[in-house]
Image 1 (cartoon, rainbow, N blue to C red):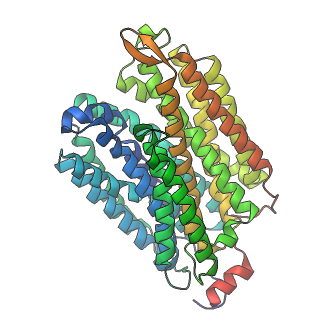
Image 2 (cartoon, rainbow, N blue to C red; image 1 turned 120 degrees about the horizontal axis):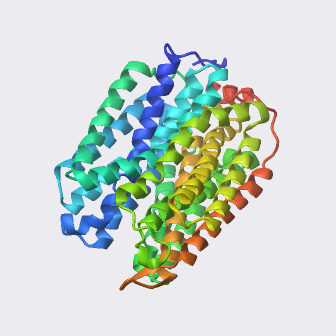
Image 3 (cartoon, rainbow, N blue to C red; image 1 turned 45 degrees about the vertical axis):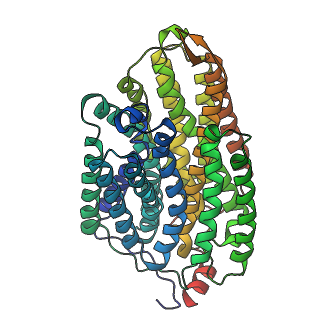
Length: 484
């Protein structure tokens, strides 16, 4: 590449490219929630303890958090398609491991590999920015970003059906097959982008970021089992802060840092990432509470005694709504700017939790509230990458979107811990068992709605930008970067 700016070139088959990348995103998102309906049965199926079984979810969160920004940066430097294919290959390997074994250690290893594939989403967004014409970028990126929510909504009922009617290994064989299909489709329809970032990969920066994230997320996800006042739960966040400060000092001095902190500290980027964390929190509370609430026995006075399959199907209308609204979100962003879109999304999320707070007594009203929350999530997830891309150089798109996806995952981790703490502590005796009270679920809705309101406040603090296509770059920075 020379010092001249390389304009994005239209892919040979842009519609196929978008469809293939979006399908990859859905498959990866399904993997994140695949084992949720299986968790209550894992101890009996594998002989593992409930604590060990919980690692089937925790480990995907950890590896996804670590690998998403790291692989985004690797893709910027060495080829996004190449790293995308490697991520899908890792997903297939993890799926096969889970499919051939019932040993909890092997299952956790396989789930760790599946979690690493979360980097597919920011890599796909970066490829779209590089390969599509500017007028196609916003709607395509909106769809790709929404696959995280779409896959989660679709994956729960499908996994529940498999658990209820088939051998549980079947869902892992199916995920391996879908991963292989993804690899073939990417090879056929997705070109390698010629755009590259210069310099060496910052291995020490990647290690420092990974260590800080693991310390923080371990404390958040395992605090309930370890005890919130235990040495590990209290000490790991402190260690995360210490590592983070040392890492930040090193990154500011590195010639080609893992994360460009100067760019990340810009209000447009920093506030967008804070909003992503809050949106991730608000979105995940919907998934966690809905499935459990409708399964509560009727003896609680509010539970519906629904099956695993029915509880999963309650989230399906929300998933379909997310598919329908991603182009609408892109249109709003194109006309009014992604800042306005994200503010609208945050408001819809808050309204969704108001609906949930006052109407959690019948199945149809529960589905209605969950769908409103999903609508807000779809619009928000579609707007976030547009905000990121408008604020960073084209050569840092993968790393920047990886960091934004990471912030959503961190928000989900904090949400999981908060929901678990509320539902475990605000309880009563019903039908000979301890169950969360209705007020526990209402408190969850109140907290999640508060997170949405905070996201709205953060969004309104974002600087107004000249509306431009997401395919445009910052000429001065891009020139400097490519000429380095």
